[in-house]
Length: 366
Ligand SMILES: Nc1nc2c(c(=O)[nH]1)N[C@H]1C(S)=C(S)[C@@H](COP(=O)(O)O)O[C@H]1N2
Ligand SMILES: [Mo]
Image (cartoon, rainbow, N blue to C red; front, side):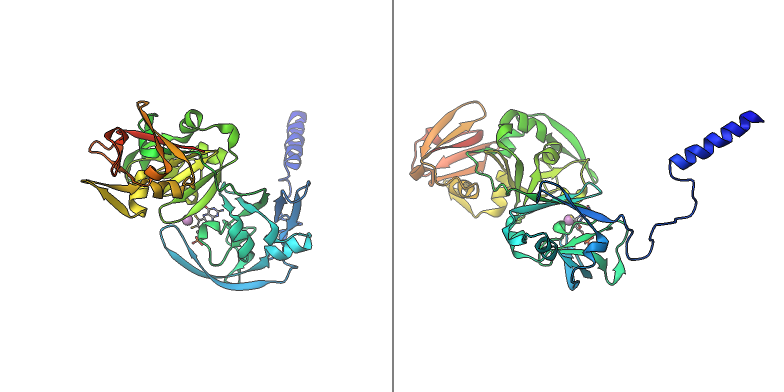
């Protein structure tokens, strides 16, 4: 009997310690006003992180906007968002959106999104605590960000943290590596994407072989449809570039929410290296023909990577063959896919040694 008593006491103590002894929900507010532990953090503004409760956010002037979220497939979703303006919160702390470089919105579910300076400086950023006059659904609590007039990828649900960043890396590349060419030089894995099995390359392998890691603090990504974004190195490099099948080249990863995937990449860069998709270039740029070859103008590719100011360029093939081409001559060239999918160049009026087979990279000579 004594033994049982001791066990009973032990079980009750355990229950108390783990906080589940009380069956009632005493002390917790469960109305639409949000619980008292609903809060977000603002970091990077001051040395210490700033904690703001939803209760506090409700004390700022509330705004209600009729908004339409548009996702990456073009699907529209209309609703009314009510919340306070980030600008009012910042003003209260002695800052303003207009003087910030960029911010990163971090969610509790692993989603995160960098909002570039142009958006931060220009747009109203609503910290919404009500949608259509109702309390937020669980997956959006405690706050849903809404930036009217911007894509829904910025409209982070389940907001936990706003990081104020030093600056957005728009990337100053010195070198372009063609994605389709480098994909053949690293290992390829099968990647199951919906009902097809495609090929993908590990970004970590690209990074360790082709990027000077010290130079990079963020990844810049641009898609064929004009989407531009930054992604943290640690998130990006833990993922894959799918190089075949639907929406390729595409950034994806089994470890990040699908909304962070980027379809139809034109190019991405880290440090001083930009990885450029010729497939993407052919979709976006006007094509140009020389003899019976059709491709994209090298100048368009260089301009996209902001490399058009170089004095000369070194073009290097996968087998190590290279030629140097001056700024005037580079304008006469196109880059195109050969019959076996290899990347080639041809220049109007230049000798045949500039016809590169299996082009891998272009490096600027300053
Ligand atoms: N926390 C969190 N917020 C998120 C996402 C997510 O996966 N997690 N997806 C984003 C993306 S990619 C889109 S398109 C929109 C979708 O918003 P909607 O469901 O209101 O249309 O939410 C954004 N906010
Ligand atoms: Mo999305």
